Length: 186
Image (cartoon, rainbow, N blue to C red; front, side, top):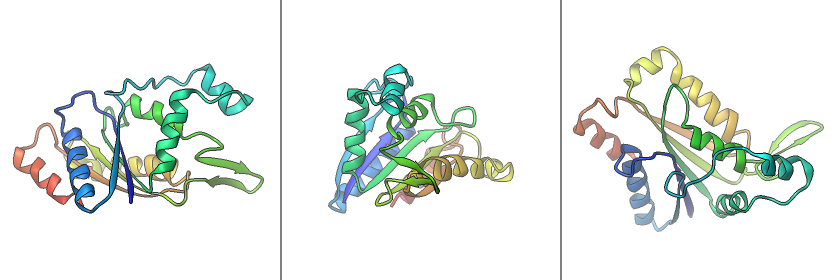
């Protein structure tokens, strides 16, 4: 299997990166080919700009970075997306990546019968880290809101079967808690 890990965190010593490392280690142990997109490390430009609009809607040439990332997504059978939740949302860096890379004609198309996902042969697992305890986000339905946005609104819209895992109290919790989270990664 070809496994693409996409993550968004500015600190290379973060728990987000620890998840990436664990996913990579376990995927390689299963014999998977792994590639990683480190949005901050690669200095990805998350700003949706005129060249993006011209490509998506005006028939102009695709920006080079968008083409590069779309090729990586096409290559992959499975995507793992890892990020912290900041202010009840994904980091702007990841949102910009989705805006610029999961484009009409690549990830989905609109037909007279509605939208059609074009990446339906792929699966994804999303790991979301929060500092808030998971129980609070479950009680307030914040986890359900995240699932609706990231699974249904983004990846399933593009045809990708998706599963999401939340890790709460990441910054304020104990090392034992964080280690237990890493041990749950398949």
